[in-house]
Length: 208
Image 1 (cartoon, rainbow, N blue to C red):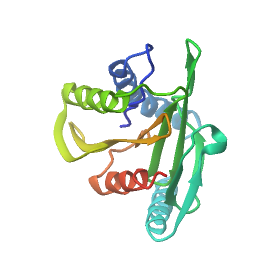
Image 2: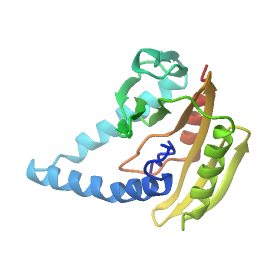
Image 3: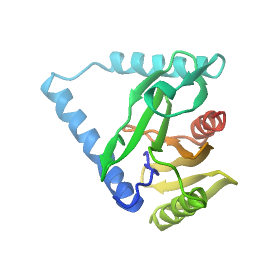
């Protein structure tokens, strides 16, 4: 499950966004089931082929990389990720009280990197505040399973769910007076493995 750790001052709290995303995790699969039934369902062969295709994409993504420049989309950052990935509008694009939040996902197979930036200059000490808030809200989750890795600008953590362990991360990068935030994008139908999260986290750390 994806958790959106962008912060708007003084708009919706990050904790509220976490609750919204948690609910979406259950809403989207239900919608997908209804859609499949209305279309007459699909064969197991088709599902297997789709899964195999996805795995092939991820395997190739670890071999061939490319740079993705989001400057033209309003986020002044270049990120290295799997070759052939798509840049898609994220769910966090919004404007509140004249302040715009820009959110895009770099997506291919099981690789889904969410990149978010609030379009205003950050005050001194705001980066540390964001990092502290991200940790606080993660630790308040009932299913919080601890940190896997903690670094100066980010961390990887575990969520223990009924379906098994899920992983995600938070990472931030300062570019001029702006703070750009990263996490794994929403994974609707399955949990992220630690290996997948480590791959996406490593891509976030290539930000320049």
